[in-house]
Length: 105
Image (cartoon, rainbow, N blue to C red):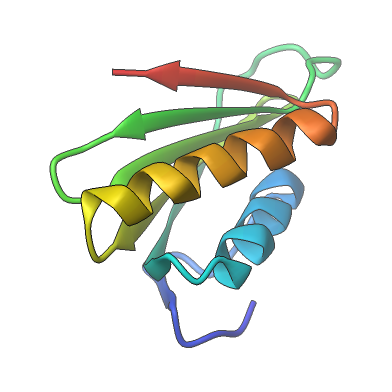
C-alpha cells in the first residue's frame, strides 16, 4: 500500500482492510489514514465482511471484520463537513459491495 496519506504503525492489511484503504485513499476529503494492528477473534470462518464506522474526537475509527480477522483503520479530515462526506461515501461504497456497514457512536 503506497500513498502520501497513509501512515503505517503496522504494515500488513487484511484483504477487506486493503480494499477499504484503497477506497479511502482516493477520497479528496481525507488527509491522513492510519493503519492499525490485525487481531484474530477466533470467530466464524463464514462470517460476512463488515465495516464499523465510529466517530472519535479527532478522527473516524473504522473496524473491519473478515472471517475471524479484525483490523482498525483511522482516517482524518480537515473539518467536520469533510468527515461527514467521507463517512457517507464509505458507507455507500461498502453497501454497494454487499458488505455489512454499521455506525457506532
